[in-house]
Amino acid sequence: MAHNVTLIPGDGIGPEVASAAKRVVDASGAGINWHIVEAGESQMAEFGTPLPQRVLDSVRADGVALKGPITTPVGAGFRSVNVALRKEFDLYANVRPTRTFEGVPGRYENVNLVVVRENTEDLYAGIEHMIGSDAAESIKLITRSGSERIARYAFDYALKNGRKKVTCVHKANIMKCTDGLFLEVCRGVAAEYPQIEFEDKIVDACCMQLVQHPETFDVLVLPNLYGDIVSDLCAGLVGGLGLAPSANIGRQAAIFEAVHGSAPKHAGRNDANPTALILSAVMMLRHLGENTAADRIERAVLELLAGGRLVTYDLGGELGTSEFADAVIDKMNA
Image (tube, rainbow, N blue to C red; front, side):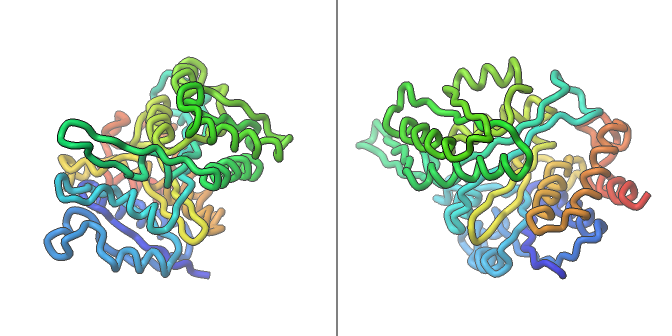
């Protein structure tokens, strides 16, 4: 059965990495009907917004989207396309796996963890205002219901994927109401999953321990802001954002995207690494139940990375964006 999927190429390097990911998915044997819609800076002149209504309509109709990176215009009054999409479809769980890759130089050999980030609350809710002309205030919103559903998602993810431990990351020693509530709820949910080890760590100590001993972590569940920061730290442990996929999951829709940005200075140069978006497409295929196609792509990518030769410039190879997609397809068909 074919699946309807919205493809949002994005801008900057987005169209190039999105094209690479699309070609790889098409070659994998998964049946995908792509609905391509444009969002980002290029849409401002015609629509007055980087997120036209037709994008929302397409994602709502299909329920699944693969999205390239998007530049949010500076000073145009639109906070973030990513935040807007997450709020529009209540994509409350941001899932960012981090693993070491054979063939990719790094300081560690055995990192394999998953950041589960609450995606709709916290300071990223954007409840802020000026107080006169010399002060600004931002409200940190943490709710019991929002905390419970992300905690439960983290434990369910651990069970489904054979993970052994969940770490709640917080700053409840200082923010006793907001982070205190998040920690309280995580502890309550943990009691319902006795087969999963549970621990909690203060966010600053957690960052230090991630750098010292990342192999001791498995699944981390965090409020929005900490999750954004810590997941980038984790990407830095294993080779950078060019290898970092992610999923934004809600009850009615799911959007898959690379963690990295649009890098407009590299647009049109065919030198961006599409691995992160290709691995995001692997997550998307597994979400759709297309596990055979997902496994074919993942194996091909891992073999290329391990080989260390047929990779992009940032990893020491000589392939461009499009050529790396060709190499993945050739490896799948070998």
